[in-house]
Length: 208
Image (cartoon, rainbow, N blue to C red; front, side, top):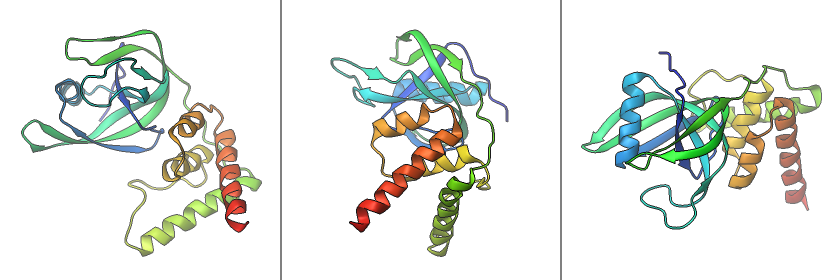
């Protein structure tokens, strides 16, 4: 199933950060997003998830409403109707984008903006000093499997520094601002190095 990236790109502001290769479950009930999901599913179009800094995810938002300029294009993987007027959705992050100009809203309140797709990240192996971070993620996956929990819905890519970094960023209890910072890093090795330092700092703090 191939999805197009329309211009302008519809935006879905959420208080979360979606990474390429990651999955996002959503429960949709607002008219503007029911319309968005129905259209994207019918016409095989992508939309963009951007991290919401100020304002409410659902309903009207009083005062300032601000979201990040850099986000992730997502594709719909599954859409199910739980009850009338409610959709259960699973989305997959594909690649990063940056919107420009002034975002606009339609009559339902749905945001859209001109979007520039950022270059796809190259697949690079973790450097020898960062292999421990990939090994630690593999060990965590094995531990969770022993507990009957599956972390990944697709085959893991432990030889891909960007994939390993993104999965760690999803799992770690990082503040929203740090997740956004990690998403903004264009070099997958730099992002994995950042994750490695964070893990080592946490391990040092727990030993003190």
